[in-house]
Image (cartoon, rainbow, N blue to C red; front, top):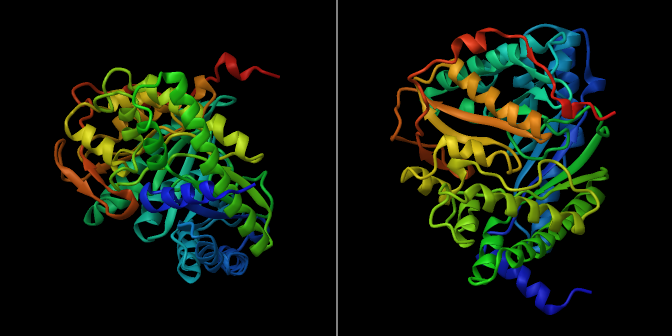
Length: 452
């Protein structure tokens, strides 16, 4: 039974602790839009997207008004476009422009799925799509791209890793006049989930229904406030507090997803209960870790504190919803987190420490700005390291780094909005990884893959 205290507590979370639903994302299959003629395929895609998601934004706004719950983004994810290219051939950028046109018509914030899944090798259409990514992101505003280059079952496709280092660098170069935003819309995965509602990594997996609604909740400010109210409790008490708080946050996401599903006549998929920070003061995963007792995020003990946080968030969330999925845990995107921005500025938070933290967080090296002269092979090596952590630990990891073209470590890059801003972080550049990346081939799957 809902009581007055619960209602007032939720109102306070929304008004004072930055609680929100970060996104409702409609996944839409494009498999029935495949056509040997690329122009015909694009027409079918536009018609299906604008029909299926026609009421998505209006429904989100109605839920906001009815329940007083902020829904920050309304998004769409689609079947990996490389699968369309495999049938039609032609210039994949035509698909990107079609997705952009549909996004503008629908009034959504982002559309994800300019993607390829190449963890075990390249199928028809995959290479063409990967090579087109920089141009596709440069000529569009709302389109996001992702490529899965590894998995625990398949190992790591190092030929794809080499291509993605070049793609990240080129995406930044082509959008250098817009603060290299192209690279901020591109993420490279290992063990990519098929039901992730968060950008830039959202795509509609082939095992998903024709259409589905997935919800991504947030609330690091709420968790930080709850932890701060227990300054002297031991870490077991802190874990319990986080679990209870995550339960409340996830219940809100479950409500939004259920209502949106009913209003739109679309199946409800999952709640992704990730703590997604913003540049707003207080809405920070780093501040949660500091509320636990760390002087600054990045100091010794940070990885242990993050492991506690990630585990407790998941335990609390799965009690609140029978359909938890996506990434679910704690995000650590540097430019989007006020506490991490501060820690990086003072030099306490480094890329090396962030890599260690990715072993226990829910994603990986996210929204990290690096010097513009960082070589493509170094970016590929960063991707390979992160993919190895995901592959060996049977978890999702990802890399979203932004080479700041024409700028050096210590300077800053400003994106605005949820993408925030951040210092350009130093990358090892004295010694090269180029020969290692140039070897290509595939890093074999680990022993953990043999579970059948």
